[in-house]
Amino acid sequence: MLRRMYSAMLKCRMMEERVRNGNAVLVCDLAAGHEAIVIGASVDLKPEDTIAASHRNFAAHVALGTPLKYLLKKSGANISNESGASLFSCRCALPGPISSAAFLADPFNLATGLALSHKLEKKTNVVVAFWDEDAAALVASHEALKFAGIHKLPIIYVTRSAGLDDPGLRKHSALEEFSFLAKDYGFPSILVDGKDVVAVWRAAQESIHRARNGSGPTLIECQTEPANFKDPLAHMQHYMTRRGAWDDGWKRQIVDQINAETKQAMRLR
Image 1 (tube, rainbow, N blue to C red):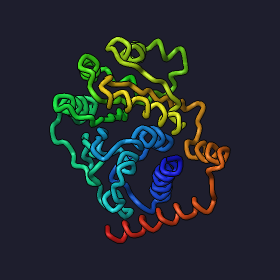
Image 2 (tube, rainbow, N blue to C red; image 1 turned 30 degrees about the vertical axis):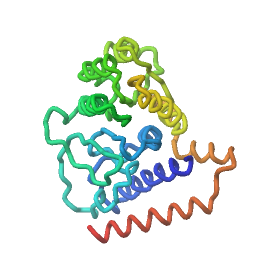
Image 3 (cartoon, rainbow, N blue to C red; image 1 turned 60 degrees about the vertical axis):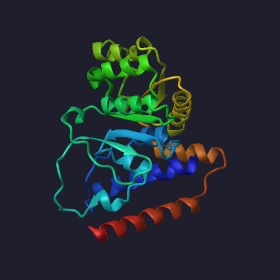
Image 4 (cartoon, rainbow, N blue to C red; image 1 turned 45 degrees about the horizontal axis):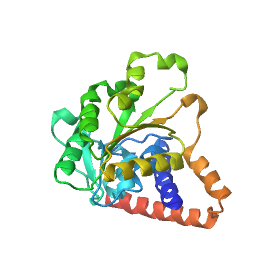
């Protein structure tokens, strides 16, 4: 499991470096340092489960195994400026954008509807929804979270919050309301270090287990304080080394595999 998470984060980082060096262009967005949130929260999902996120969330595509040939373009190629949200089935490699304008900025509402269908059909499927903006922009999703809490829907809401360790920022009305959201709507909220993929994974494991057993949703708030930046990749390597799970030869193999996939993807573009 540790190697799976590290490999996925490494792939995100290597793509970021290629884009920064001008060797490739991505048709979706990279959020350097935030890949631990998506990878940690989704790595334990089953094939019948679903990820809901912006279709431009590169880490979500990596988590699902979307081939790089669908995500990379050669430098100088035209890129679509479409924005929207997608439902990603863990069984599918190629997600399709949801066309309804109601979901362009808020995958939480889309995911809540899908979780309701699972509940009505008495399925054990779980939905993990990622909010790609800061927590302060979540006001529009309050009704979805309230509905999920009332009906104990099988969904995990994952969001990131920058700088919420600052007491001054906690006084902001939107952030203060968000911090009490889960409690008011009857389901737990877990605060984790968004740069620590293992911490996110542990919180997600517990939350997914609750959802699958009919106990309802969980909100996972991942803090990503820019003032105390911690590289998730370096942190994970240190974690694995301390537990005897690190191997330099294994990393070189993963780097070679990712480079080979990247070269193949660029030839196909």
